[in-house]
Length: 401
Image 1 (cartoon, rainbow, N blue to C red):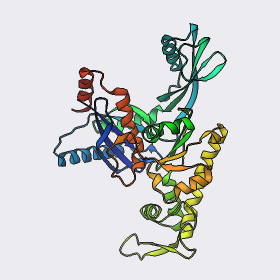
Image 2: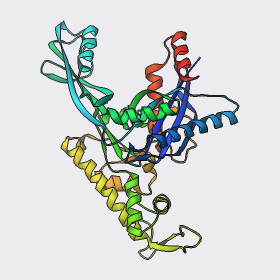
Image 3: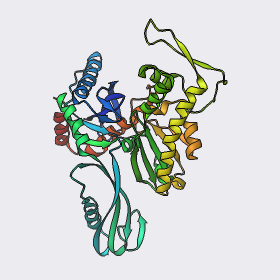
Image 4: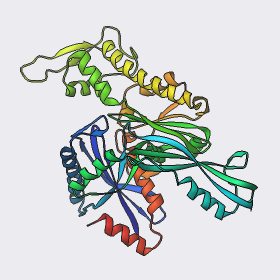
């Protein structure tokens, strides 16, 4: 008997829907996924709900088409929503409870409940609560306090929350496509769920999820999430810089970014090398631009982004604790020589994040681009796997109409 889940990501540049399936207690496999260009979204924000609804309808139709070609009829009723954008924030909160002598499992349950009592402003919606370390009286950094003696047990957490209106806009758009949003999830922690090894979490790792409208970050130390947030700079900003610098269309600039540009200046080409820009119509002739000039524009924006990330990590005293280095995810991870630029700017080892706990994406040219959606499916499997046949039936009836 299987668990089946769907996850939806409404991004600045693309809308993605994926279906994951796992036999009870086994690894999750992405059995079908589809993506189409997004419409009505800018800088990770929905600006036109009707256009976004059409994008969701389009990606649902693409899933159904693929399933039909495979000889399977599949209609998706609900999905977990992958959320990104600069409106996402993370705040620490500590719960506490009195202990009568030695810490018991009951005390753990009570302090966990206390740690989940943080009151958010009415315009914010909770996406995740990440448990960190326990504290007992004046002793901190405890991972397993049961059996220890003390008076006050504490639990540190990190509360990740989003602008409620922005999440509601996504719900409204999905509802217009007859797709119910089951639960919103933070894109970057979803990506981390899919790509981080356990030893990286313990030794200290930074996940950078490079999207079209923004870049999410999630820092892990000692096995738990210690910082998270979003920088309002993404791949679209690079595209816009290219279009402005060389007076091209957005489509031409995007093509230059993906197929010609490097994150480093003068990495492989001579100073005289030039890049051809085809005419935007049959009546316009092609022209060329300096490759060094192109790379300079790209490099300037990316260095600005990583300087902001570095400053953020330094403010939180985290930069020196990330011994396992940086893991790059998102569509922007495919940028040529990006790993080398990150290595220089942040002074850490770098790798691209391939989903390692979810199967079915190995044939993708850029599996890092699917890390967040894969992590959302993994989250669903870990937290909603049926405990009985009845649990499975409720999930199945909710997901499929």
